[in-house]
Length: 438
Length: 101
Image (cartoon, rainbow over all chains, first blue to last red; front, side, top):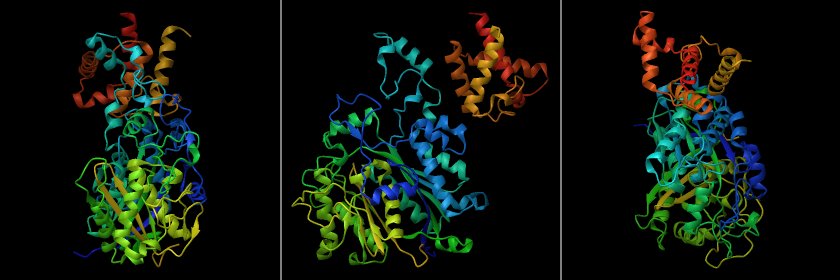
């Protein structure tokens, strides 16, 4: 079977800075932190008092939707996804009504889909997403469930199903081909993009809308991540708390958002006169098969994923111009990712710039891979590497060039984007500048 | 505004809000599905909003019987039920529930 070249023809984003790729790039390349003090609930009893939420309220997000009737079926993840995908679709110039519908697919990386959304129930959740047990009858289980069945919104199930986002995108853009949802923690959206890339490469689709979303800026997500000990608790320096590869790093910054890309076969793109922003050339996906949250010291899974992605691209490690790191700002990830990069790149590891977008926008969990690939496309377009912000104390275990503090102009030809997740998931993508790039 | 007029206004507001359409387009004789574009999940949403506003629980069996009787009255089949499921039927049902306390 003839293999197709795959190009990216549109990108869209809702980030912790707000809506749109221009705002995202303006802030990101200047190294501006999106970390904010929590104001939506009293977080004083939590170990962490800050996060990087999207500034738009639910109502404000609804105002950006083309079809407002769908708002009641969408969590924040759904609304952010439809807004980000619409931006990507508009940039691509594709008219989805005129495409061969069965050759168009959707691939979404998603996580919990906001089961804590306050509006799934009339009274059982208060404004911050906590179950209001005070309004429920005590010591009477029958009455408890009677109250719950009366007061819980009947659309809870359709809002909460993991494939809600991909289904809405499929309906909106009449994508009647493969419509999939991947849930692999922090690698979800990177893997979703990789799988979509292969669908087109191996001739199973012409166009895929691929990306992902997550919203973990809510009390219950904060509770569960806090209990795992993976969040920064640097409340006094909350704006610079996310500091990947820094000696004083103490955990990641919870975040939310959505990012989508239009993937298209080069053949399809050329036929319609589309403009590629970049070529997607490699995808490596592995599992550590080790432990749920610990990464193996020898980093076999992440090393293999990087090598697979580079090999599929037909490149040598020394052809990669920049690595958009997973770089979570946890003690373990940054040390082991550094080690893994050294294993893959050998001597060249000391010369290749590596930076972490999470130093500014925090960790979008299931949406992280997609927003970081969008950042990588923008890096290629602008020929600028966004910095690793707040990296001021070098760590002997993290001794590569992390582009600390300030963005750096560079001649970028190929970018490797890393995503590693709980469960031992590893997903890496390679994009390249095309002769047709803007 | 008397009580029944107020009920009508409240119902129209609920339907318009759920379907994100102007209140002026919602008439008592509009079919929820055929005229106003509601799908089955919209009906669930509207019923829930009515329950919250008027403080009673829908009995789906009562609704089913009401629509079946209407179909028989007009000599229509079950496939025509969406056309018969009008805003007025919801309005009549609310008044019935209110009358029964």
